[in-house]
Length: 305
Image (cartoon, rainbow, N blue to C red; front, side, top):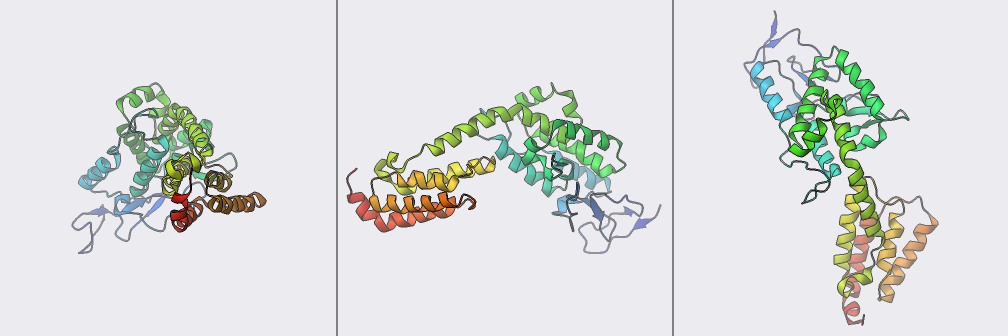
């Protein structure tokens, strides 16, 4: 068997690389013959290069073992479910999972097409892809000749299992089909927890929409805007930010005893009502509220409640 000889100074010095190393379908080989994976499936453009050094699948046994251990090691922050304290929602968990799989170039098995044919990553868009579609693609992976894709699918399942609590694992084991590969396992995890998360999301939406500046002690605007910002960020993570968020924020801020402050946000609310297609500007609105509060601070504190 022929071998590529590594050039001095390379990160992979002194390793011998077989010349017949298979080329990944969703990745490439370096000039030295080292395969890497990540991106480029279901109509998405291929990655131009490895996102990080962790994306390499080095043929040398000891390097492959090192990559396997790092890629399948669970996250430090374990996901316990939606009712665990302190809260760590499946949406927050999804963000951490996505960052890990992108760093290790094992993300392509999570890319699926929606019913409308749009490619999405099911880590943060599981609700857009049917279980039937995930199962259909799973049978294709079982027959694929791409050893990197088969490897990534298996590693993903191990990684997810290692990143959830024992209680979550016990419940996932009731879905035997889910243990075949990472995407099926993620779909089962999502189904197991998302109903609780959606209930929590609805409660967050109601909580945000019922806020009023006058309900905050001393009508302290920075406290109010900070709470609004946190709620908006959490809802945006869950893709559940109200469509009329600009109007919602204005409504919260105009409900106060300071007539100048209130009138300012009433005027802005009217503007947003006239054009419902405007993008979410809640960060700008909250910053404007803090600035206006600082201008009116002495007058505001002198005003009786």
